[in-house]
Length: 187
Length: 183
Image (tube, rainbow over all chains, first blue to last red; front, side, top):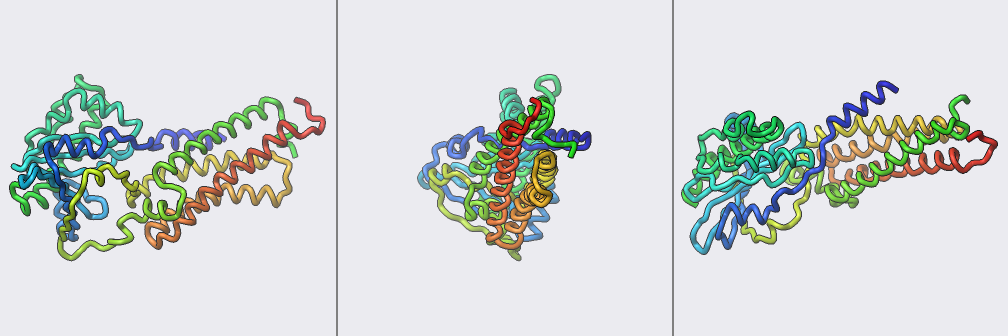
């Protein structure tokens, strides 16, 4: 019986809580590609060498080896691009939307999904100004939102989640810089 | 037999009743979660676990780019919740121990029921086989064929059936069968 109780306790502690949508995708698209009236999805199916290159850069492989970018246009003018990146954590996945200006700098970052458990941590980190720290970053820059929030300004768990958002932004920067910007300068 | 729930102390009966009620609540919400993230049809289960891996298992020799227009409505379309291999490993690691604990708890209830040995063994087998079928179906759907989604559905329904049978028998024998039991 003791073994059963221990097993139940361990399973309960490890259990991943359900995912919740923090910001709906259309709202994230409107915020990160402001003024766009048409959109183009670009799916980049990575070869093994390119997938390996990306993995070397940010220790990450996209789901099923496919990167998806969404380009927004207002009439004939490009307003930028965005991508959604999933970060798997021991507490479940979070999803980060990263938008880029036509010049290739980060326009904004939105945490679109988390789990029930992580939602308050995300809200605390975002409320402390986490996503402002990523604005204007360019491929090659290292996101340091967690460090910028600093200890003492937010709780440990919000600081932890900021580190996970850093990972998502780093992946988006590497993916964008390596597989989008080089093919699409200025779009 | 010393362990007989039908003749058990009131406190034991109450404990078992509370356990079954609690598991029942978790099963109801488990079913709701399945309806939200995977669905109850073979097609939706296959889409959840097979995902794009079924249509493009091998990476291309050179990186390929495909483009297509997107409307805002398409961004709003509910996404298919896809479970990739990493997440399925994590899910299996987390859920299988818990399913084992639940099957063991329900089996302990079965052992305390007045049932023939054959029926008791069959019920215990059902309780443990159901989660095995559930997860075997997920893995087979991902790596063999989308048709194995049916195995996952059978496993899920078998879990629900096992729980309902055990609960109905236990409640009946503990609270409604009259045989001179001291309550």
